[in-house]
Image 1 (tube, rainbow, N blue to C red):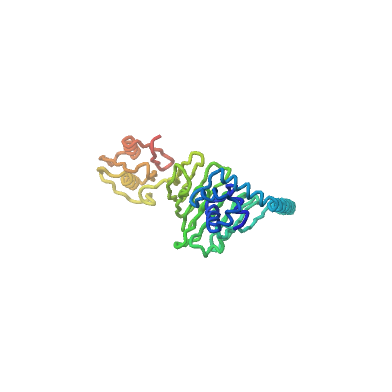
Image 2 (cartoon, one colour; image 1 turned 45 degrees about the vertical axis):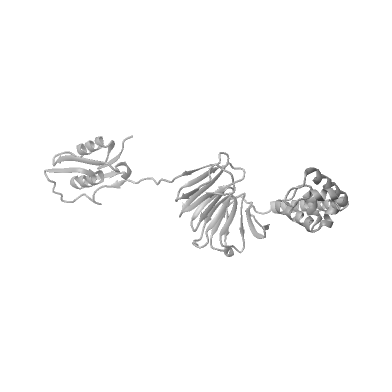
Length: 348
């Protein structure tokens, strides 16, 4: 058992796992415990409980007296090492400050024995990163990602984002691509989307460009919103870190005008009956028929006439503009004549 870990224990700086290791060590090595504790202390010792505060303080004093000199040397060495690191960092900064701003740094960190490669963009332009599964990441300035290498070997394609990045993900149904950003996890199989999650920002944003993705809350975070959302192209998901609530802005494409009747009504010979009748006919069919009968172009927005019908009996001599005006009044529509055609729209 390392003396530093014992020191940490009596300073109450151990994690739960480290505390368990120290207590197990003392249980299995009672001779070591005797260096710090009296017989009365030993009787109070229970591996499943924390030591009483007064006992912990007394034992820590004993440990401190035995290790003071050794720790002093360690502190001295640490201070010296820190000074060297500061000087080295300054030299690196001076070196790179004179170089072009497009720079990426790469480092490897240990996370419970899992190696994560970090790619950071400290430039002022977008940085392209190609992952070995064929996925492409466009990393924004002041942003970074971390992931396991080799990337193809992991069962899931997990990427940890700090900042903002656009992801073009290669399809792989057997291995989901998951972007972890603060309190959210965005899962895809293959698509294009952008995640924005800066630490200083109060919101996390996910925007889908194509395909389909799922955005879910991280389970171990206490929050008001603990659900999941499926996004479609153009949708934007926003999670507010202050209110701990989520919202989705759905993309609604701009509707286009639809031309009634045939592609080219003009120049055709049309025999109109003396009378013609519409009986609860959908307005789309009514406009189609009128466009053919009168050989005039009629345009409309589909959602404006959706679930709207017309019943009426027309004469051959009735003017088209009169008929359209009657239809508009009954269905709260407006008629606008432009040159040689009509445009039907919803009344303001």
